[in-house]
Length: 133
Image: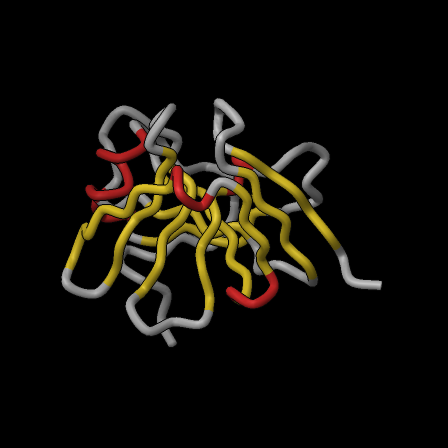
C-alpha cells in the first residue's frame, strides 16, 4: 500500500492527501520565499496525480515569476503550494502536513539570498543558488 499523508491550511478550508513517497524537504532562502513566509520556504513535492485536494475553490494562485506560481488559501492566507509551469509535480509546504509527517530535511538553496537575521547551521548541504544538476 502507498504511503499516505494528509494536511491542510490554517483554517482547514483547503485539505490535501498525498499518496506515495515524497521528496526530502528543500529549504529555499530566496527573497520571494522569505517575503511570502517571513522566513524561508520548507517544501517537499509530489506528482500531481498522487495528490487529492478538497477545497480547491479556496486556493488562490499568485504568479510570482515568469515560470511559476504560488498557491495559498484565500480565507486564511496560508502558503501551501509552489508550481512550476508545465510541471507534473507540485511543491507542498512541509508545515502544512498533519503530524507526524515523516518528512526529513534534505538541503538548502539560494543561501546567498537568505535573511541576515539567522544562520544556517544544521549541517545539511547548502547551495548559494539552486541545486546543481
